Image (cartoon, rainbow, N blue to C red; front, side, top):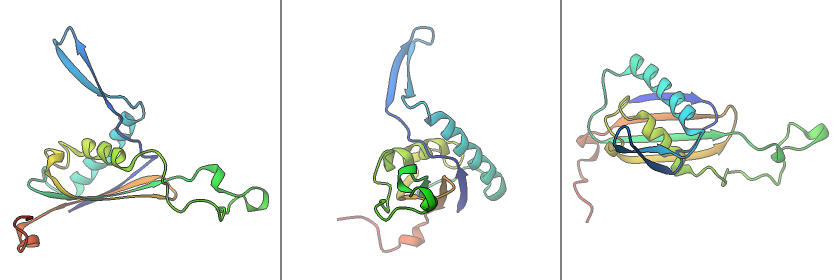
Length: 157
């Protein structure tokens, strides 16, 4: 298992955009989101540091990924005046707003490829969570799944 926290406001992997590069004579695919590149760099840096401390080499085989995204509350969720530090009773409990949880996860999955595991196709089980809190961060846990963990589970009928 490897576990680490990435501090900063999580950014989604944007839609993919492709264009033909005449010099390279091939199509280059990039993320449409401007914020995704710095966020992926933060995730990669934290993963490299964690891998240096905890795990030798890339994880191989099936994996379970658990991600918890903590995003800051908008200013409108807080009271004003003497209640400036209190969350309003009418403020939502969960951040059911953009960015999309799956796009946030995709950015982290992409950033971990080649650092923690060979390819994100190795992920066979994933738990995702998005909540309000401070400081903004993403808590990452990656587990190697062994056959002994699922001895009674060979195939889904």
